[in-house]
Amino acid sequence: MVQALPEPELTIDQKAALARSVTQFNRGRYFECHETLEEMWLGLRGPSRDFFQGLIQVSVGFLHLDRGNRVGALRTFTRAMGRFERYPARYLGFDLGAERGRLQAVLDALADEDAALPGPPPIWRFDDLPAEERSPGSGPVARS
Image 1 (cartoon, rainbow, N blue to C red):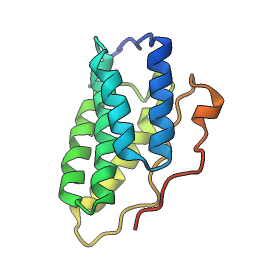
Image 2 (tube, helix red, strand yellow):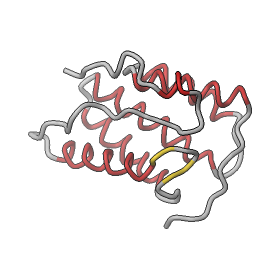
Image 3 (cartoon, rainbow, N blue to C red):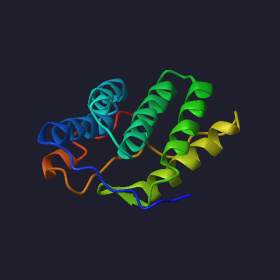
């Protein structure tokens, strides 16, 4: 059930960490993204913790895919979807509705062992981050 959850007021350091994690994710550096978000997440309190833990799980899920671990990716993406359930379609300037849709498409493909994964990995964007950090940079790393 979606609740009216207050958005966190991130510190300058937390915004910088989030911007860094977005750039890392968008460049396919999922392990680094996970590490950056986890360090930030450890200092958070309140209802935004599950949102950020979901983002961590999404980055770990794509890391599993890069390493050929479909079962690990399926489990991790499923946990991320559970974390995102209570948040509205747009949270902290992030299109969580679209992210849930993309994750569901990946989950559907992972449930069918013979199915190919849909499209390239998603690009994360947060409206309130500096423009240079929102851009995909060199773009995501292609998965083989």
